[in-house]
Length: 465
Image 1 (cartoon, rainbow, N blue to C red):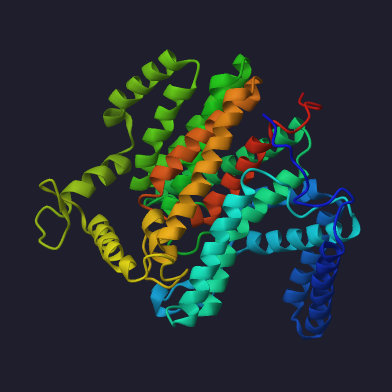
Image 2: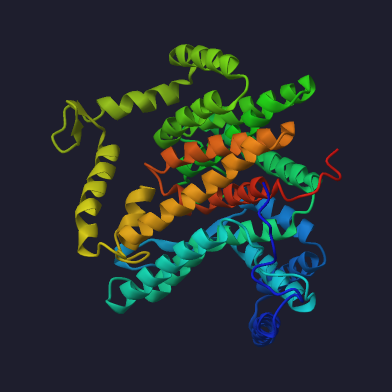
């Protein structure tokens, strides 16, 4: 399978004049802004600006180095709140992290390189370009209409849209840069090393009690986010474990699986516990070692009630016992759910009724109250059209990744694509109880790996080692 890739819809001579001029104009405005800012900056901010310029120059010289910086910053960068949003978002602020700025800097360096090298293009043509573009357009349209009719603040919606789509920038940067399988292997190991670091940090949180989260997530943390990220990484490593012919590599991958699973238990994330089940079952259908996988899963399933950590078991029991004597909780099939899950279900009910007020394009991004469920949020913010286009994008990702898996023969490629598919299916279930596909800490590594998987048929075998 080959995509017949070309640089965007560019002509045979490289970029058009407009494509050459636009990056130059953007860079000139950035330089002008820097010239005006520098005299007014404090020493600390000046140092930060200098660091940004160093990253910019380094990224301009070496996109490979820039992508490594981005990989390690995905889970290892601090976050902070910039301003408050409107009441429609329940007073949430716009959360920015270090990798948001790193990604912006790397993006500007790519624009600069594109303006100089006429053979470079901004977007490589891939099967996902159109689904991505359509979904971006419906989000923009719904948000603009929401601002026009007073359902949201345009500034707030704009910044949230940037957060929604910055991980797609990661996808295009990676597909533009990857040329051989050695790069894919090296990037994947960088992702695994990053997950190893955050898993070890998570394990060190266990003795302190409470729910385990990724580092630098603020005072309250986001264990549900950490759980979704671990589901993706565990699935990828399991895929590699099942396909490698090397016993030594199997031992290495098995170690990582155990290491990543420990903090997953202690996140106490019910959405993650739900997601791991379909993720693991996916290997039953995709792996050539189907019988072996079934036996192992049966052993795990029967032993978990006895071997799972106490906090994980208590979290599951709490779901069905905490609201037993309460009248204000949601009841399903005669079973009363806990107050937290009941509040979430009630918010889904409200949203399912309210979206009819704006059925086609929704309330706009940030135009509706916070809903902690991806699919409900999509239909309330972007309406029925947005939900359809979202599922078209999801289907396009799955179809292309599955095609790569079916047609590739090399063990590493099959392991990566199979693990990605399993993690993807797990995240689809994780999204029932979380805004999984707009959480940057999950989506940046997801789209990075999506780019690697989809480029497997197009890249050279040189340097695979």
